Every structure is written in structure tokens, then in C-alpha cells.
Image (cartoon, rainbow over all chains, first blue to last red; front, top):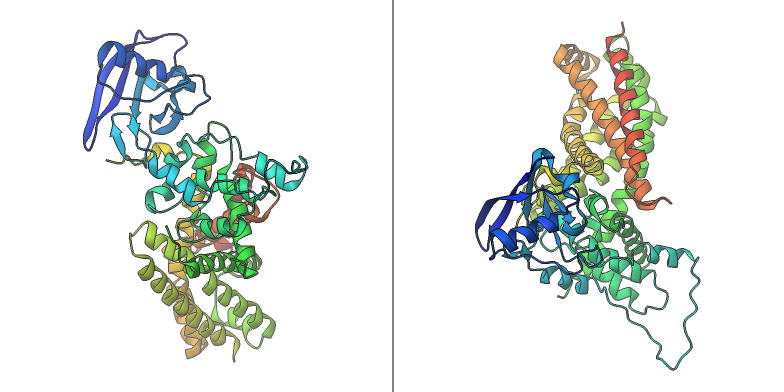
Length: 238
Length: 118
Length: 119
């Protein structure tokens, strides 16, 4: 194992370039360790995000050697070909500074896809009885572990090609709510996810499902939305 | 952000029709592939082709359905490419694609007529 | 400043399946009017069609015919995979279907090649 890693890190705001750093290599080391080392010892002005550093919060998502990943869960040994690393911010999002992106549009689209639960009962009514083995509940369960890290959104070419596209995360969330039998906002939601910016422009490139660190499948969720919205349109319910 | 309802319904329908025509095409293409691989053996000749197709109303029906399905199936894909890769506006892309679909329909029906009607 | 993905983000099977599907569809769509025009030559009589067919005896045309069959098979098989993803029972990227699609297309290509060179 070589002593040092050659690391290129993107630095800048509106414009920028890659800066080179030499980072001591260790047996067990994550890309987040590398970024942290650079900021602490080599470049104090480097801006980046992290929080839990154990693969639970999704804050540390960046582009590593061209692919969106959680840096705290990416071992250097797995990605550093020829002892080299290239680290840049997530794609498809405006850069605030260096490795930190502005995720507002990502969360705005979550809201636009009606990714919020809307119920009709109050705390005074009995609990809803939802069968865990029902088709709908299993479909919802398959998608609810999303923590909004943005890796799927950053990996999707349609997000790049169509700026209004809601994106895999927002649509995946919408699908989990479409399958929530307690929710009363279904028509609004299906209306929101159909259209030029919605599920029908997903071309099943699959980068979202391929890169999701939680192994979710927005591809499957979006396919479900396509069926659900088409059904509603045909029945005149859209 | 308000959304144009007609767009939403229109998009859902376009998707629906494109997938339906895809299912029809799957059958037509499977048959067509088999016929093509069989037909090119020993070279192609007008006599051979027309001998099979002229007066053959079953063939006429199948290939008419084939042409119509293709004319429905192609435009949504073409307009997506125009918007996403060639950076056209949605309107130009949809209009171009529809025109192309019309071209496919008319030239296709003409071709079926040409080989079926003696 | 917004970063965009490059080829490294696209290097996985499902993306290649998308690319093949889109490019084959485009090629087939553009080819179709030509194909219909050629068949339409029969309107001028069998001799006119024969003239055209003789013109296409050249090697380049035979290669194009083979290529078109390959593209058609790829687009068909990839399309069936998409229909199964969108309407079927399974979930995920169905990479098993990508493998089947490639195998099916390879078989069609082989069959077409054999048919083209047969006397």
C-alpha cells in the first residue's frame, strides 16, 4: 500500500477548479476521513458537509471519481484506483462553496410532488388498522427508508436534461404516500406527479436505483406512479 | 407552482398509448423478424415477395396494424429525444414528432397497399 | 455553477440498456420511411421493385440489413424488459432481463447473418 493518496478536490463557488492534495493513506480509511484530513491539516478554508459519519444521515454525499456516494461509507480501498481520488460536489445542484451544494430545489420538488402526508383523523380517533402484509403496505415499506440524501437526484440524467423534473427521491416519496391508505390527498398527488415534470419522463436509466446507498428502487416506485396516474387519467379522475 | 391539468392528463395518455402500441408492436415485430430471416435466404426478389403478399388479406391486416402501431409508438420517443438531447422546446418537439408520425402512417399504408393490391 | 455527470456516472448495465434502446429506436424510426418508400416501388410494378432489390445486392446494403435486424431485436427485447418493469410483478432494474435481451439479440443476429449468406 502506498504512503500517500493523490486527491483532487473541487474548490470554488460560481467558478472553480480542482486543487491537488497529498493525504496519508491508512489501512481502513473512508473518503470522509480524507476530506476531514485535508480541511484540518492542509486547507482550513475547505467547505464540506457531514454529520453522523456512520451512514445514517446522508449529509456527506459527494461525487467521488464521478459517482455520487456517501463519503463516510465509501472506503478509500474500494475507489482509489492508482492511489488517486477525485472529489467534487453532488451533480445537478447549485454549488454554494467547494463540496457543499444548495439542496433547496431538491426539497422544494419533494413538496411539489405532494410528498407530505395528509390525514383525516385526529388523536381522539382510534388508530388506523393497516395490514402489514397488504400489497400497498409492502409497496410503501419498500420506499420509506429514504433519508433525502440527494444521491439519486445527483445521479439522474433526466434531472440534468429537464430542469423541472421532480426527480427520483420526490417521486419515490410520493409513491409511498400513494400506497398509504390513510392519506386523503391522492388525487392532488397523482395530478402533481403526472405531467412533463413528473413520472412519465423517467426513462428507466436506473442510475437512481443503482446508486442509492439504502438500496431503494425509485425506478420501481416511479413505474408504480406511471400506472397509477394513467389509471386515474383514463377514469377521468386526474 | 400551478400545473396545467391538460398537460398532466395529456402526458398520462401519451405514455399509456405509447406502451399499448408497444405491446402490439412486440407481437408484430416478433412475427416480422421471423419472416425477414426466412425471406432473405437465397436472396430477395420482387416475384418472391409479391408472390407472398399480393391478394393476401391476412398479411394486409397484420401489416396495417403494424404500421398504425408504429405511427403511434414513434412520436413520444422522438419528442423526448428532441427535448432532452437536441434542446428543442416542448411544442416544437411534439409538433415535429407528430408530423413524423403522420409521415410513417401515410408512407406505411401506401407500402402495404403497394405490395398487397395486385 | 452546477456540476454535471460524465461517463463515469453512466457506467452501469441499466444505463447502457437505456442508451441502446434510445439509439436503436431513433435509427429504426429514421429508417422506416426509407423502408416504406422502397416497398412502395412495387406500385410501379414488379420490375421497379426488382430494380431496387438488385441495387441492394451490394455488400454494404446486406450489412445494413443485418444491422437493422440486430437493432430491431435489441429494441424489441429491451422494450419487453421495460414493459415488465412498468407493468410486471418484479422490482428493481431487472438485470436478468438485460442479459436475456442481449442473448436474444445475439441469436437473431446470428440467424440473420446465416440467412443472408445462404444461397
